[in-house]
Image: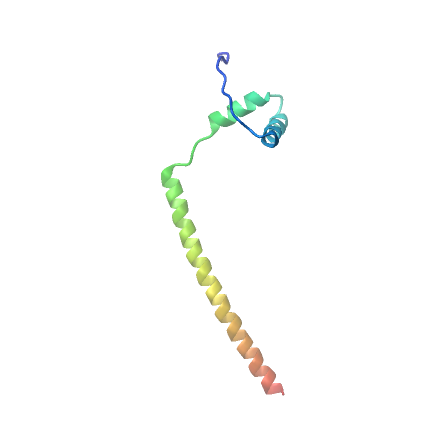
Length: 91
């Protein structure tokens, strides 16, 4: 393993720095720099095909959600009408 000879300066808020340091401490006996290095080197941005597939699924779920809500509204109205009918029949 070669020795690190370069620096990478990354602006970060005090709150985020504390969170990263806490995560590094929880990860074991590694430094914050090693934790950040490992996290950065292991990060892989999402594949465009995967992102497109997920967006398509999201669109489908949004349509299904709207359809489900509309059906629930119709069912609620039908139940209200049935209850009103039986309440009138009892009176």
